[in-house]
Length: 86
Image 1 (cartoon, rainbow, N blue to C red):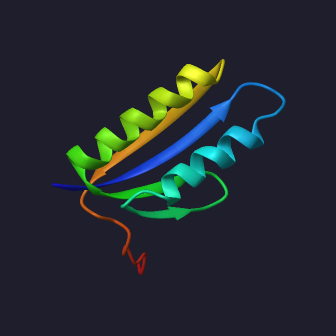
Image 2 (spheres, rainbow, N blue to C red):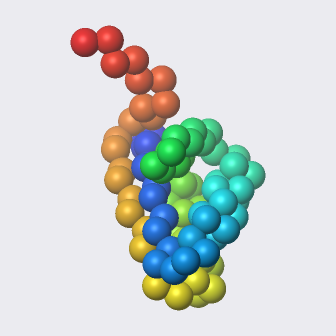
């Protein structure tokens, strides 16, 4: 099953930009299709594979970042080609 996952990361300290940029670089290097905007990053692919990747990398960040929040929204299907033509 393919999914689209919207990931937002919020480090709760003054130097918040550096860990966000580093996490985005990790997402970019993945085998999955990713898209970025000013508020979040979307990652698209097979549910089990994407969730294993997200779980591993979020866990690593949480081990190294104090007081860091992640918000994930998961939608079934690959929405990377969504055309909002209403």
